[in-house]
Image 1: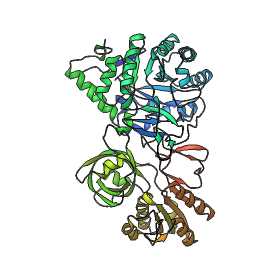
Image 2 (image 1 turned 135 degrees about the vertical axis):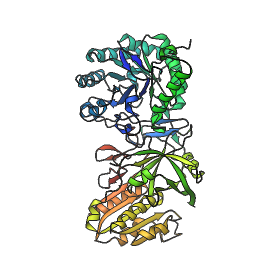
Image 3 (image 1 turned 90 degrees about the vertical axis):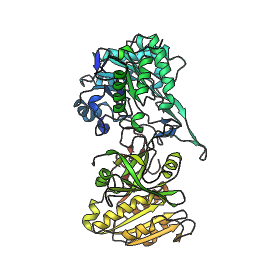
Image 4 (image 1 turned 120 degrees about the vertical axis):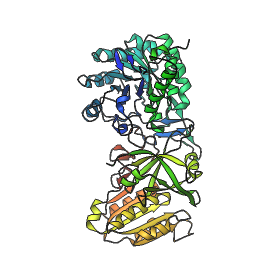
Length: 302
Length: 260
């Protein structure tokens, strides 16, 4: 039996498959189709200190091999999340990653403090959402700002490891990754969605209410694999690779590019059982190729 | 809340019934057993370039041996793929999703209900009318179409009174179905249920509110997950955004913010 466990910042995940923020609700919605206990971790929907209303609809547009979304991180705020959603998740034997969002450094500190006694496993610092005007992606596109917000959150995160989620909407993602590392990040997650647009040529209007949105799905996977590869070579931090991963082959690709774990997002929509099928496939691949531990193939690409 | 089932369903029939409109039945006993009128299923197409499942309302369920019936319009590549499928092939589906119509109040009263459908919004009202009839509720059904009515034979079996309008005048009243509704609505009506394009839903909701009759509208939206996780399919209800797939697709007409 192959060992699927991986280690991120001293925390053991029983498998390398993680769900991506914003695609898995708070876990409850998928619990009737899949066994949440098999997941390495569940990343919950983005949570802010105060409730966020989100963007006007339409928020979703399908594109060739992908989809655009401009949800704008609608969420009921940290207090309600901790009271209503977290207790359900804690019943499962998996790790919990809480995705934090904000518009200012102070917002990020406030939401970090909201979770001071929540006993979660990781923070994921969302400085990469393209659908939030201030904060969000703006902080993730400047190495100095990425460093500053990472340091601020680290200071208030006590012993909870902080993973910084990076935006691909930059000229040099390695520079941002190094900024987060300098700020004290315990790990990185990349990539968030690529900023995109779709136009209804008959109505002569953008399809999305927000005009632009984040592109996800298999269409962006080669970009994600390339960025994971570049960042893994440049920083000394564990990486959760994400962006279009939908099959076990995709997961192996991310791991070979240098990822420790692989986060599954849009694939949950096209196949609610995608994560389970990926785990089965990874285990079979390891068995067939005599791989005892995923560290044997991690970052194997020169 | 009914259990949601993700299952492979065999197509029993798939036929065109009007221009761009298709009728499909599937063998999906677990979904058929629990489905209520106003609920929908997600249809997975298993095509790499088309990632997202298609939300389709149930036109009927559990009619015999665990069948579900959907009627859909070919509006894009996904529904075009569905239209080309044949009996014996399989489709992955997830259902039954959403809240469905609330009928407890009216069935206790054994009174009259009014159902107003427009175009491809008509099919879910057949399911509702059938459920209401089974509980002894009389229904007046108003259906509006651009040119060609659909499912009229089926609706005749469940309606006490059936009114049809077409914009072209090809069949029934020439004009909008709301004109027929205004002319025929009477005082004994205890509930209005509507499904169709947003302008129709709004007109029906405003008319019902003026008549002081509770009105439920079945809405649609672009969807990704269908189970409440992506928060993509929202409509403005009161001051905040509600998910069509989870809080809906049926909302009370007076709660929807029609200006959004």
